[in-house]
Image (cartoon, rainbow, N blue to C red):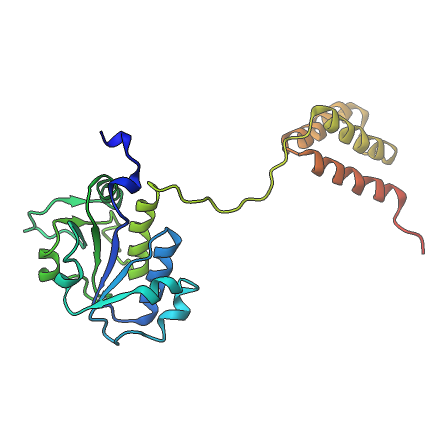
Length: 248
């Protein structure tokens, strides 16, 4: 039963194959996208400017492990020779008879299919050619605005790797500590503090509007979702204002 296995038990991470990439910067950006979502195995098929490429490192923004381990192949067939499942990222052609999936659907298949998978990405200018696509068992197409179908290489890589990562237990970005909301007692203290400062200044004049003005002030305080630290900070501000600041 698949449910008795973890994702890692079923399938290894997919390899990212860049077929005849043209710019070192795009290779670096693709590496950055890969590492963001936990992938490290990049394969290059006849990069136009050779390999290694000095422009790739800066664009990778620290994803050096991907570039250092990248392997270069003469043909696409050689690059995917050990892969049981090959996905060609391309726009669907009318005469295609291969299954067509979205990045999300491809990710689900990769996670649950034994054997190594490869995602093929073509040259920046022209995309994969017919011979490259013929090596794939499945076409992977990103739903996109038909009036402006212009994804660059790194964008295409990040869309696919992100969908794959959703099935993995990747750590979430570090978040700041969240304090619980302040208890009503503290909010009442802040409201009373404000009213005590405003009353002698004539803020609640005219008297006929005083009740509505107080209610509006209360809503401002209670709707803000203050935590206890924020309430204490604001009361400190009010106290300082009341003192009139330090004396010279």
